[in-house]
Each structure stands twice: as structure tokens, then as C-alpha cells.
Image (cartoon, rainbow, N blue to C red):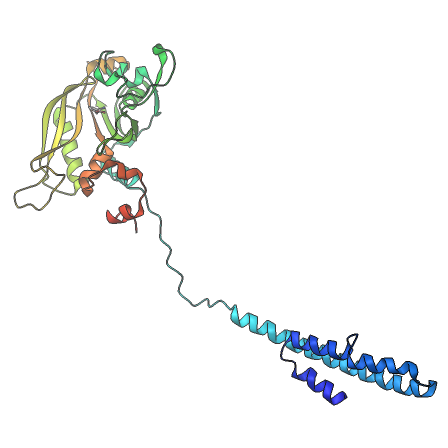
Length: 339
Ligand code: PHE
């Protein structure tokens, strides 16, 4: 009996099988338990001898069960460790890297180019008052730019109602009021107009430039902006021209066009085939200087403003402005803005 039981203990292949063996031997209806029950019917002498023998056997079997249990448990653990092992030498799964948004990239480029020319970055609030956004810039009350159509007005009394700035030009005013003297700033930022189609968005970005000193003239303005466009588009002989225009805050005013292509066709900007308007500019209107407490007989300078989405669209050949705000990874990858 002993040999038979020990053999079945050794033969149990796993913990569950071993438990079955234990129950079959030591359980309530187990073989050894049945033998123990026969002790009661024996005489005292016989019971003593048989009881001792059975106890020895029981201990022996229990010891074998424990030993086998430990062996099996260790084997099971070993097996699990093997199965769950992490191979630290495997190459990692590729993770897609994030990237800087194309508008931010464009701001960085523009700021770097003007930085080389000595311009520093200035910023102002996106919620402006009527005076900074319009009046100080010599935009009279009846100017079309003031119509509710274009401007997002905040609720409140008309005299001091706030607006979402319609351009970055109010930062010109804030800077001149503060410095009262020479200025050389570039102002990237968000601007707002009530307008929506493929080339307009209610929120868009502009870069403003302002230079004030005692000697600057229109020729400096043309040279500065021509240099900027050539650097930004990476075309050394990019054609540029200035057309007379009108802005209440500059006098004289101009719009700058760049050539879309060149005989030979080494480059192509935009969809036209001759000139593309790229920005507005001019010499700061003396009235604006006066509004800021600067003496126009001493100081003068130039200002310009351009749409950031517009110059990015021209550079990368993007047809729809609204796609800048959709965060579509396929779009970002297509234009090389993301890995
Ligand atoms: N503020 C003008 C606009 O939004 C652009 C501009 C800025 C023109 C500075 C001239 C000088 O259209």
C-alpha cells in the first residue's frame, strides 16, 4: 500500500492532480482514513501496534505530499517566469514624435529673419479697447473696418466697449505710448474677424512690424521687406514690387507683391502667374505718432502687417486656410510638418 501511494504522489504531474491524490488517501473517504477507522474495532494491544504503524505511514505520506507540492509549485513558477520574460534586447515599437504646429514654425522663421535685422518681439492683448484697435490708429468712426460685420464686439456701452483685436496694429500703439522714442519690434499674434471661407477664418494670425527713429524712410521699408521675402521664401532674386494703397495709420501706404514665378519657372508661388499680394505697409502716419505722444517733427518710421497663414500657404502651396486648425495628421505629414 505504501509503495503504491508514494508512486501516485510522485506521478502527480501538477498541483491539481496532487491534491486529488491527497484526498484519495487522507481525505474523509481516503484509503488511509478508512484504515484508521478500523482501529476502533481492535483489542488494546493490537490497536497500539497498528496505530503506531499507521501514524508512521501517515507522516511519511504527508511528508511526500509536501515535498512533491513544493517541487510542483517551483516548477509552475519557473514556467511562468519563462513565459513572461521580457527581452530587453528587442527593438522598441516605433513611437510617432510630436512636432511644432506649422503656424508656430512660421512665426519662428519670421521672428528669426527679422531678429537678424535687429527687431525684437512684442506682444499685446487679444481683447482690445476701441481706442487702441481703432481710434489711435486714425481709423475714424465711419471707417468700414468698424462695421459690426468685420469686428467681434463685446457687449457693453458703446463708449468703452471691448473688441477682439482685428489686427496686430494696436500693439504699435501700446509700444509707442510706452517708449515715446525709437522702436524696432515685430509682433506675431492672433487676430479676429467675422469672416469664414477657404482663405478667411474668424481667428487667424498676423505679424506686425514697427520701426521708429529719426532717419528711416520709405527706401528702408522697401529694402527691409524685400530682404525679408527673399529670406523667407529662400529665393535670392525673388521679384518684389510696391503698389500705392491706403491705410488710415500709414501715409504714404503701399501693398507689397511678390513675383509668383520667373522665366524658366524654377519656382512657383501661389496660383497666379504674375504677382501675389503679400502684405500691407507704409510710413507711420504723423497723426498716429501724435496720438501716442511722439513728436512727428522729430520721429518717423514705417510699419507693416501680414497674414501668417497667408505667407505659410504661399510657401507650402496650401490651398485652404481652414486646414491649419484641423490638426489632421495626414495633412501635417503631407506638407512635411510632422513625421
Ligand atoms: N493692419 C493692417 C491690416 O490688418 C496691415 C498693416 C499694418 C498695414 C501696418 C500697414 C501698416 O490689414
